[in-house]
Image 1: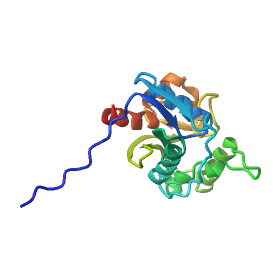
Image 2: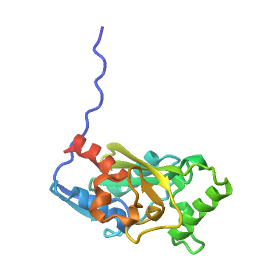
Image 3: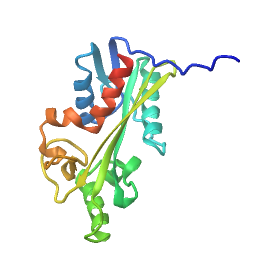
Image 4: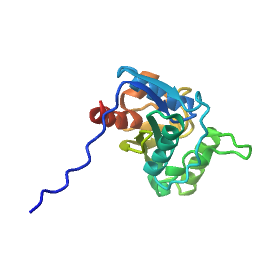
Length: 211
């Protein structure tokens, strides 16, 4: 009997320059902060003037991979992309992978207050007994110019609230209270949110695997 084929080894990330494959300044700040103690020099896709690829995937993993591979191919550097979203139980997991789409306006900009309002309107329409349970998911894809990709996922559960509270954070942060907390993400300091959010949890798995 032949030995079974061993699983593909996780590729280690070497110190040096890494592209953060996003034009979202909030994500760039969070990811750059998480990488700061690992000898990694980060540069954003926006700084390199890389185009934002169309997110045609139907899963967080597919979209994260698409963005990371595009940035790695165009820059010739390893690239890290995040695809994340808010999943509301009573809405069947929406907005989910289309989280950013709910914020899109006719002129191509994003209005997050409008997006938060859409979620609230749909929950309100379900009646006062509708569950307000929700969770954030973050899938990180780390890609190399030769096409190799690694994936890592993090999740944090919580509750939707209304009206929005807090001035920090970005996206849907003002209407999401993580489990065990009384404050929304937008009411927490940057360091407090970094300690346990969905992106930090995905990043912890990445660190354990590639450094």
